[in-house]
Length: 137
Image 1 (cartoon, one colour):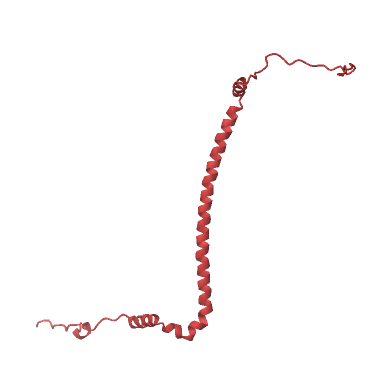
Image 2: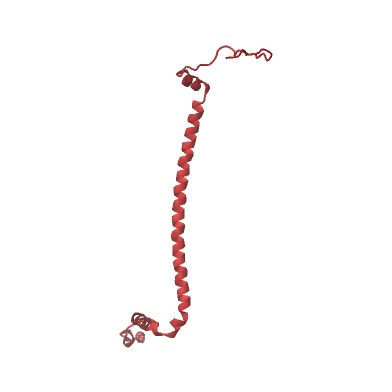
């Protein structure tokens, strides 16, 4: 006895119909209403208008605050670079000053002007208070 043939489980009448995704028709309707501007005529929009304006204002403030923060960060980076440069300059000037103030450098600089270090101890000048000065006239 031969094996019985199974009937085809896929119906050709169903396969020929276009496939619809759920909600595709409603998306088209919503897009059409949006483009026509039907949503502006409804009273729901006018009732929600203060909230929509609040969200718009908050969004604008958020964007402005982000822009301001970016500007401040750029200024902070610029000032940090400037502080680094100033610190480097400070260190170099300080080392140059310390070198210039060494004893040997001072002696060399003052020798050009005729000032030199004394080799003998200073003399003591004594004042005698009981001696009367002579008048000049």
